[in-house]
Length: 157
Image 1 (cartoon, rainbow, N blue to C red):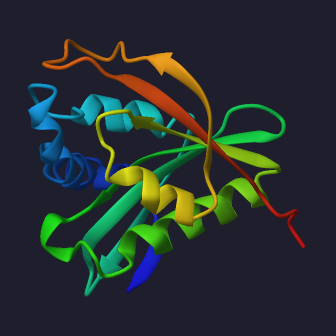
Image 2: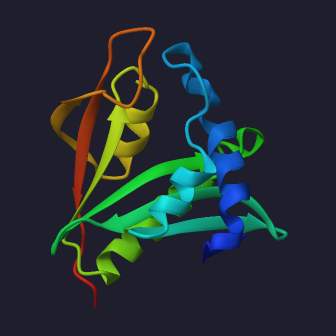
């Protein structure tokens, strides 16, 4: 497997991959997670990293620098049949390395409160809850909110 930065030409493939990975959220929201326009917009502020297996995207993640010392990682997506093979962990490590090389001392992620299965994964990677924010992305079927999790990053060597 190879991790590489995505190019604009990857936008449609990224959109499909993200939406397939996030179909598990349909118990609390309707519709797809992202449109191709949303993917293209993110290219203006950060980078998508793609983990490829034999030239086919197996997973992706988005990373951006939000301030002089703080980064953000989101939209971690793994093709559903490939979950449990370490792809998500590899992508998170690559995104953290990208944030570190961009000068970030800390990185944030947002996790929807009802996705309780995700908290142990991120905690094992060193993330800790630091705040909560309202879920305002779209109407929900059940009450929920965002949990902001933070991780300090090692300085670039």
